[in-house]
Length: 384
Image 1 (cartoon, rainbow, N blue to C red):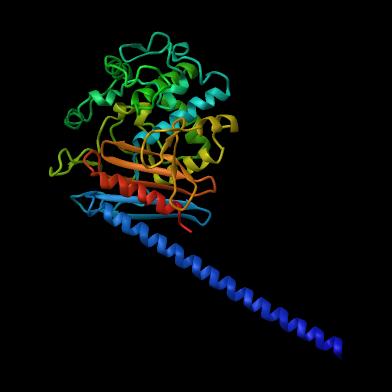
Image 2 (cartoon, rainbow, N blue to C red):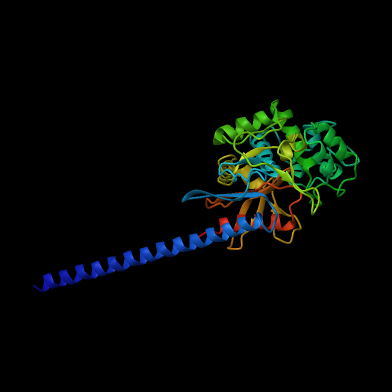
């Protein structure tokens, strides 16, 4: 009888404990759901700000984590028809192209076809010679980490000229010649940091020389196909954006009306900024890159070896990959992008969260637009 009573008491205790655990679990789940809802509300508020106060026609953010993927949009894809931004939008990713380009170079490093600390002259003899720099002193690492001192060719092309003639083809060699005709941003390679699209124009040329394939073929073979990035393309001279997409807009002056610049020849960006992608594919790409699925560990370590850019927000630059501090602690890895018609950003954490953001306005977006794009990335990656 006593044993039976103790057993009954034990069973009752277990039942009470189980009930308490279930209650605690339910309370925890409710709290997590509430926190997630709060984060999503903050993200929606940022998107709303991007398409009202900041002046962007439309915006999109796609978040990917262990719970799955979600897409939020605001504003319009077309200011005339007022069509909403497609949830599966393709768009020009601008300088996020650099992360693709650096990945290709580092894959060749793993194959021992390229040495990071070898001079550019070894792979592109006689190509980098001029007031702007010397390929015998500039290494492959200097190109990828933006420490070559080479002038940025875009600094010598007037934005209004591109906007007036958006379908013009640009030869990479001509753009390089434009840059090399000017003085370097600092004299000794490796002793300073200065963002230059010329570095990645040369990285693309190096890829073609080493692989004997076009840059586009290498992106498709080594990144797009392995990751099944069905919404990503290297357009070459194609002026259109394939698949569902918002119109791209520019504002040539502070109070000027928007102009439609959806059709543009992307050779002005090339291997420094010409790729088209989507939120889904960018999240796949940066997740795979940070997760070690595109590079072996030694090359990924080199890519993530950063140096300060001198910015006040703690941003640091690796090899085609940037690190940014998160307000909730830790870092995220990614890149930002600006191209005619669009401003973009994407980031990933090592614990499996990714986010991509797009606004269909550029150039002409205010500084607040860039700040809010960054805020959207941070809010998404700090989602509890």
